[in-house]
Every structure is written in structure tokens, then in C-alpha cells.
Amino acid sequence: MNAPLKTPRTPLHPVDPLFLNRWSSRAFATDAITETELLSLIEAARWAPSASNLQPWRFAYALRGDAGFAALAATLAAGNALWAPQAAALVAIASKETMLPAGAEAEVVNPAHAFDAGAAWVSLAYQAHHSGWVAHAMGGFDRVAAAEALHLPAGHVLHAVIAIGRRGDAAVLPEALQAREQPSQRLPLDRIATRGQFPA
Image 1 (cartoon, helix red, strand yellow):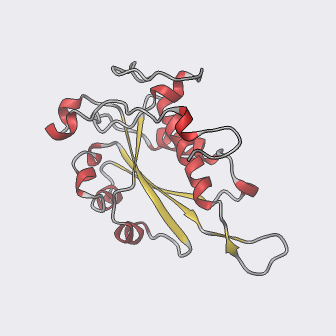
Image 2 (cartoon, rainbow, N blue to C red):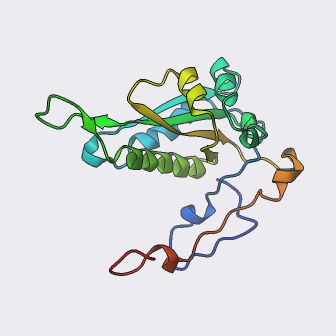
């Protein structure tokens, strides 16, 4: 399990500690991850909730040392390239944008494809935390270059690249990032949820 937080999060209502203790570290130790260990995390994503059970999520992964790891790392934005290549694995998550309704002859847009991919990502993230790994999703990457490197099929969209590894010491990070190596906080509950209507 991951170590207790140095900057504790305080919930406004009771929740399982799993939801408070997971956070997106940038500092990675040198530990490797086996393919079996990584697939256990993706297995959790496989069981995520899915509208009409369409399961539109797709994953492409590479372990550190793979040619595919270097190719995917090369697509990262400059800020992410400072730390993410030290991860044990990189995982790209995409989703299929269309679906074939029952009895239909042509596919139509699946309005829930990105929502479902998000459910798969969070399932992976919490399984990673439960298993003692850090999973840090990044939106900063070259989507065109990543799609080419990963042979993304037509009709699919890339959402994120996820860096996975054991949490390391903040000292391994560039000085500018060391101060950010702590859990982030969240908006107050009344800013995101109100009874009877959406918050203004």
C-alpha cells in the first residue's frame, strides 16, 4: 500500500480512505512493473460500468525499455516529458466513438464513449493505488503523433496517456516540480452539487 499522505485531505462527508489517499504523483522510483502486474490494473478497467455494456474503451501499453515506450514518451508535452519517462509503464486510453444500435444497419455516434472511458480510467487508477502503484493520467501529449505511433484505428479518439510506477522521492524531480509533489485539494461540495438544480 502507498504511504500515508503528508498533506492529509479532509472529506466533508464520510468516504472510504481509498478516495482520499490516491493522488497523482510525478516522482517515480526505479522499480519495474511486470506485464502481469500491469494487466491486473487494466483488468480492473475492464470491469468498469458501461452504457449498454458497449465497453468502448481501448488501451495500448508499453513497459519501460520497450521501443513502444520510447515512441509514446516522445509524444509527451514538454512539462510531462520532464518526469513521465521515469515511469515503469505508459498506457494510452482511447475510446470508440460510434456504436451499432440493435437492428440498425449503420453505426451512430455513441454519446457515452468518453464518459465510459473515464469510468475505465478511474477503475485503473484506484486499482493501481490499492496495489501500491501510482497512476498519473496526462492530457498533455501530441495526439496526432501518438495516434500514429500506436496505430489508433479510425473512429477512435485518444483521451490520455497514463504514467504508472512506484512512488519515488520528490528529490528525483526537477526543482520546479518538487513543490507540487503533494496531494491537490478539491472544490467545496456545495460548489459542485446542489439539491434540485445544478450549481450556478
